[in-house]
Length: 85
Image (cartoon, rainbow, N blue to C red; front, side, top):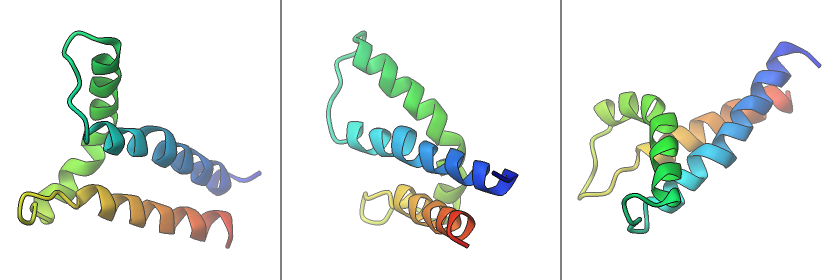
């Protein structure tokens, strides 16, 4: 297993276990002080450094933030090119 394949696996895990739960939790109101609120804060802190630069370039359109979709698709494309090249 080379370094690129290992990096591709790490990105894939980040996409499915950090980014996707962040998107799903953003649809619901979470009560402050609960365990789920702490999980949501952790996920926010883990995804915000990746999403913030994209948000600066692609502003929310009509109140809808598409930065998540852009990052998810770009990273998925990179993973497919690395793992299945």
